[in-house]
Image 1 (cartoon, rainbow, N blue to C red):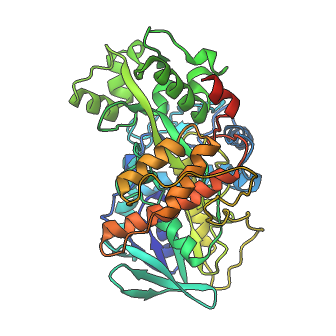
Image 2: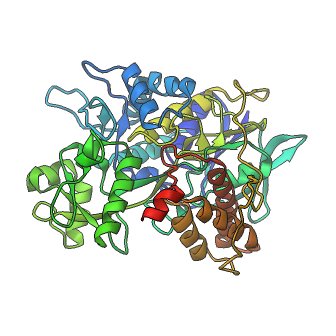
Image 3: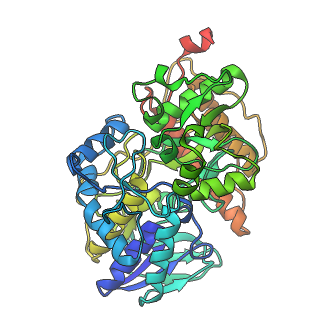
Length: 498
């Protein structure tokens, strides 16, 4: 088969290498350069390094609980059962995971995990180690690589995807197209994601008629260095013993959740935001108790970056704030990456496998890319049919978000001309950590009042994709009437009491 894979993170690279090994003719297209994207920046590790007293079943339970019970059990089972093989494949590809003195993979603990089961490489440089190893393996394969190719749309014929079209008008036919384009962090004014995460794959899938699900669930990482230049401070730092303190120096997370700093990310992020708002200043992450030697050895990337910025975190707590980090929803797929449109697959953050539910468990994203990237490659056949009934697609993109409620009205648009910065402000303010029905309804109105920019440049294409994904996300959020995981609604009663 002729296979096109769009995206060069862990999911796309795994799919490309596995498909190549199976004898497919594979072309890998990346929007920028190889190595761009989120994978190389991932500080967290790969969950699934099970030790004594641990098991895939316990990992599955933690995943389901962190996702607020919204996860798909079939997909979660596929994830945890595939963890051993996925980690072994990464080791075979050359990833040098950190080891204990006896040579076993060292197991770290992160939030909402009941056991230490996270494999790291280079302390806090796991993503970079994985990206380097897979790119090295790619160079010895027969995969054809094309950098700086911006895919505009999927080509369709008779309700089937038959290839892709780039923004310069070039068309490439294929028996299968695999989207591995990452998330949509650039929807928000504050994000940990690199500049290229503009929801391209999801927008392509929407235009091709594929089912989309769970876009309302956006994870905000709770500990991002406060300031004009965001920098993620890994959850593993809290797993190693760092704590969150308010302006008085008081540790506040034990009042919020029994697991304190190791509560699910949505819980920690909202607590951080509330405390910061109440004191009109960021909270701080206090890692001073770990000591300079431990911080430098265990978290060399973070240590070096903070010191570059003039911060000695071994002596002083670090101001932190939440930022958009990961999209749990996306293109609906089965456990082999098939979408609702024949000929189209999706893997990684651009896909909604159902693994993450309403809130992603830490270090499940790299694992998901490795497990489902390989599964997608192994399922590539021209007659492939999805193996389960599709989730209900996101609501129609109506100005009321698909909900007709007596007396509900939407305000007139307040920002008549579209710009990316205006979109990011709107999404941050109305569809961020805490949401209200009124705010979401106003956001839907504004999003549909804006006209998508003419696709005359790569940036304009990205802006159009962001607007399309923003509309779908806002409609999905407005249609979910109860708080669940990362979708947190502030009730009118609480608003009145605030």
